[in-house]
Image (cartoon, rainbow, N blue to C red):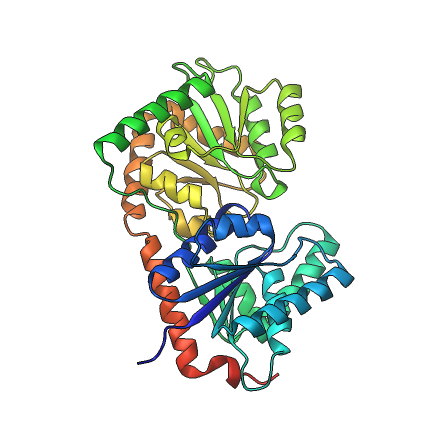
Length: 387
């Protein structure tokens, strides 16, 4: 009987959806009988491996920006760790981790190289230098990986243009709640009451976004939109759950614009926040397959989002009101249309719930990943690729 594949996950600094997805795959593969290890910076290890004693962890430093001498040391450490652990498959998340995985596995003993899978989670960042560096990493992954998995159709098209001969789309699902016991229902009600108190909206409409406070998420545009509805009666309260590098800048922007925005910081009670939301807004300049958007659609909350990245593919034309990214006027008009028109809000709820019912589950994602690993091992993918 063939032994299950040994899979090593490799990540850099990962927060949000990437970390959640990698953690679900690692845990799910372990439950399926695969041997699993995780190579990542310590904060990412804590998010992905948690306290699971059955998942071996190897701390390495894959930073967000190039460090010539440090990166060479990280590649050497990764190569050494992989040689000791001897995985059948290396699954890297993100193009930086993918490039490191490619260089580390290329240096392993001839005839014993593991198959390399790279999941591409993001589009290139803003800024010429950053885009050039990111583009180089993308090309390394496209041309060296045995399989490139892309979390949205636009990323798949991009990686194929860059030379990925073996590329597939891989949908990243949001976690789903287990069937609730009576105790869980009571706890959820308490969470909703606590969230409502924290927001302090009273009977006013709640415009909610959950995001990392970073440029990609377009929260500056949301603040500008919130300033446009500050004179409405009742005045909506705009709620931002999340933290990140732009926290102080966004608070200052909201204060200067006299926009009624509540910054909650990082929250673990997203379902409770969704329960009090009148509308969920995703103002991102780019998104792949947003987890909070999937959660909002499953919850039946009306959604306003930007027509960017994988969002239109996720929502369809009926599951959300879609506006151009970076357009505060259009964002404000869409949000106020939902607040003013109960029939529109009801149509969005129904369409979103119906579409969300077709989304893959976490178990579906694990089964797909396990199937991919088995396929690559059966084909001898790692050893077959010429370097």
